[in-house]
Length: 629
Image (cartoon, rainbow, N blue to C red; front, top):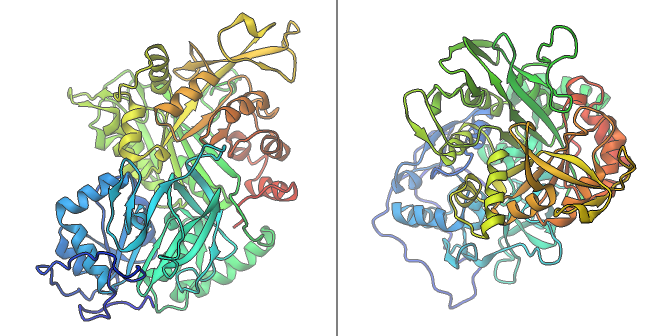
């Protein structure tokens, strides 16, 4: 199993394997007859142009392999090893595969039992059909229908985060994965049945047991994302790419990852000793883990350098006489370090700034100076530049080469016109972010305006950035960032918005408060509450909510439990708690008292006041499931 194919003469694996007798079989396309190439260090990648495939590319290259892209159906049949990282919507993917002739080529490739690894949608497409915007017919390799998770009983959908595998078949691919968390992000799943049980190599539980991986001969596919599952995921990738290897472990270093051979021998000893001194004993994964997220607020300082900073109620300047922007490090270096430290995700938020002469950004150890021609801009954008040349995109590309957990980017996801008069839609901006390494994008002000319009008219126009991006890339790829400010009232009858009875009374003894949403980095207040905004953006296509609180930001007194509980109880999508973390106890408090799926912090990690590992050890001691490396 998993042996590398060297030619077209392989043991055939009919697409009907595992099917009940009498089921229709796909016709083998007679015109497709191509022999495989023989480059042992080259992997063929089927990228049909949706979502973040750069992460898969980075993982493959990090493990020492070259990539050959599929340009035609013949390229599929010529592959030694084929990786299909499907992302986006089921119907859109099948439309591309059918229109290009690649669907038949995939069926033939699989029929020949050639080494194949499908990822996420790349697993789902193997089944008969999907209910997503359908029914839509799939490749018909595995019997079964892909269905949406049922949120009617309070299950949070999408299924986002680190969950545990239940291994049901002994396969080389999953050796060593038992008891470890891997990263999932999906709303649809395939269910085990008598008809497909011979295919199943592992299941996962989320509301019900679903298929998390399949294995039959040389055909492998996983619902989770190995390229975003840290060292465990890279090890799984390595087993597919080098099926005859001894299953070498992935060694994490501060500046790179080394696998196999002589370098593995040298560094494994050092890493093992270092990890044994710093990390607790591995706890066996059993269910969906709560996530600990590191956030990087990135902007340019007064000298034009891109730096990581941290606000105090959104004010990022020192309170000293210099009033300089707080500089807590370089974006790529910090993102890489947080991955090594065990962060479950890294969130990069791009802040607004004024620039007049030039801006510089750091990528690895190289400083690039870029002249500017505009006076006000989002540093994601440097709006005088063509979209593909935006400086922040290069930082994102560099970070994605070092970070093998999810990367979310927020700030600047809106329509804009560059210095040459070229107009870019928010969808085009988001697409460039995805191509540069982002796994999810976060929308702020634009989502507020879209929600206000929707609540006023009751009509989903489909034209907002939120609706467009979620329609193309799936709602699991879209986070909405909410920036509210607490407004105390004596009685809920004073306002039309949802209020909450606060844990601590207001300055005049008020027992209630509502949370007024803001835009433009907290500078402008809007006539909409956090509760109303959260409900509206869920209906418009948001897959996750990042819930900040201006009052708590940078204070270190803990998360706003009243706000987080109100919102997390109101929606059926994951909520990330943000703003106010100052100690490990604040993390356990927010998970024990609210339905938050994740908790985010910035300053305490940047200043090394509280290590990520200390947070996770405390959560484990408190009985909270977390991912431990």
